Length: 342
Image (cartoon, rainbow, N blue to C red; front, side):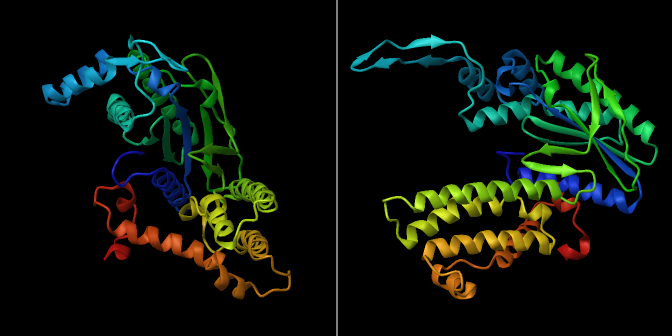
């Protein structure tokens, strides 16, 4: 989870991808229910949070500090040279503070433990307000039934905690190991019907039933292309940016998009590599104002930008090294083969 040591959105998605791929090797079916907390910072009740902190045996000094953090807010209004006196305001958890995210994680910490106590086979993943419940079995009907009952527990729990799920963002998807298309559905407590989808968007990653990331890569390449064209317009204006500035713009605006979540989908796919390579070559020609016949290797050396394949491989290697340094109880470490860690 965000704001927790050695936790990230990439980890959460990788956990799901790993479990789905292992499911295929066992010829089972994995069914996922995606839930999203509605207006996450507006539904944290102070009394409920204090009860949880007392249950966790948190020191009284820290509890008093949390009360102060959530209650003692003031606002100052200033117009031109005039400034009004500070006034107290009543507000929910501030969205600008990292502490707010930590308090929300504490607030919902018992939700998944309650579900697991009732259904041992149901797994859960979460990243702040984005949650997922999933189960792997061969009997599809039983999977859907258990997931439906787990969803009832989740909706009942959040209702008692004054939290709400955003029904419009609730989604269902099957990761299947066979060619038969599954069309099961789940009916929530409010009688809302969630039908199975062929592709869902979770934590900035498009996931389809076959987990080939085809849709995700199409969207990513479209985003990179659109951003690159906007960057070209900026380079064509009268500012006359130098090579160093244009390179910095490329690294900031383009590489940050292309390199994100590489650890999830990169597996030496030539089709994806060719498309990214074309985009990088276009950027090199623009930065150096070079001819189309210029050698790519020479331009990469001149601008000090490595090849696209080297960038993707290095990103995955860095993540692999990072796995070795993780705590043994980390979810990614648990899913890593022992032979790799030794």
